Amino acid sequence: MFKHIKKLLTEFSVQPIETPSIDFNMALAALMVEVMRSDGKVLAVELKQIEALLVERCELERTQVDALIKTAQLLVEQAIDLYLFIKQVNNNTDDVERIEIVQLLWCVAYADGNIDSYEDHTIRKISGLMYVTHADFIAAKLAASA
Image 1: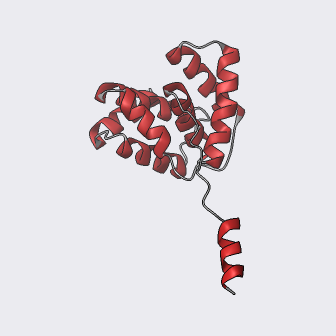
Image 2: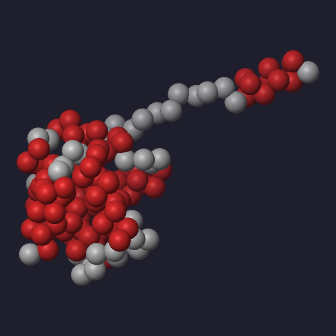
Image 3: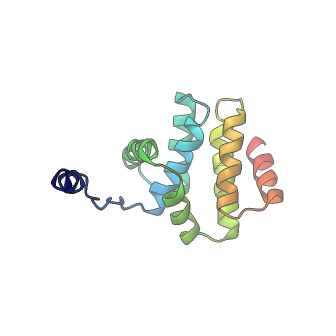
């Protein structure tokens, strides 16, 4: 019996989980993708908004952005939580830049002309994890809607 248990334990031994290398651009793209898919829909207009924001804000080429978004979508689908993405953003930004990122997330949510309650909840959760105050969260939302 002990041989059987030992065999099972060796078969299911804990393998180290490889954490993908995530840079700031990937983390930002992943957060935008998370907001986009939070309402259960992936709309072309939201994808185009993410592309435009990444080209403009990260100063990337369109081909780089396409690859970045595809990788970000895969990472978000596989991710258990947003910790890796949030950590990367928090480590590379200050308070003002985090507020700007929340505004970018609102721009993605507003792209289809409708703010879903799931999108609102996701942005609220992300902004809390980025230590953005509620007043700044609201200010970012209003700035994005204008």
